[in-house]
Length: 124
Image (cartoon, rainbow, N blue to C red; front, side, top):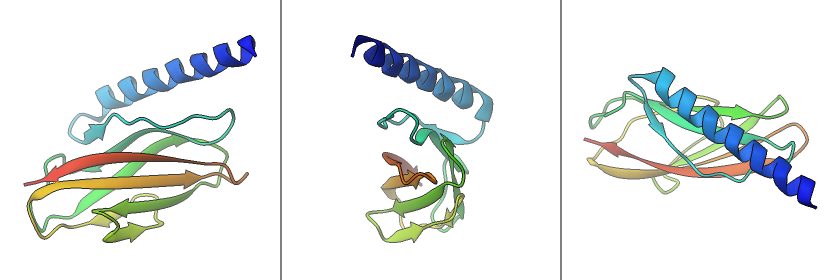
C-alpha cells in the first residue's frame, strides 16, 4: 500500500511539472491549470489551451488538450453548459455574448479508462 501511494504521488508531481512546462512553452495561447484525477495507467489531462487567448464575441476559438494515455483517445467536449459539444480532438467554437464560460472535457483511452476536467475562460 505504501509503495502504491508513493507511486501515485510521484505521478502527480510529474503531472504538475508537465503543466508548468507546457504553460511556459505556449506563450500566446491561454492555458488553464486544471485538476484531474490520475489513476495508474489510465489517461491523464495535463492542460487545456485555447487560441486566441482573449477571444472577442463572434471570434472562432480553438481548444486543445495535452494528455497522456493509450492511443487512440476519444474526446468529449462540453462548452458553455453543454450548449456546444464536440468529439473532435481540437474543436472550434464561437460565442455570441461576453461572459465567462465553463468547459468540461472527458477523454477515454483504448482500454476504456477515462478522466474528466473542468476549466473556464472569458469571451470579451
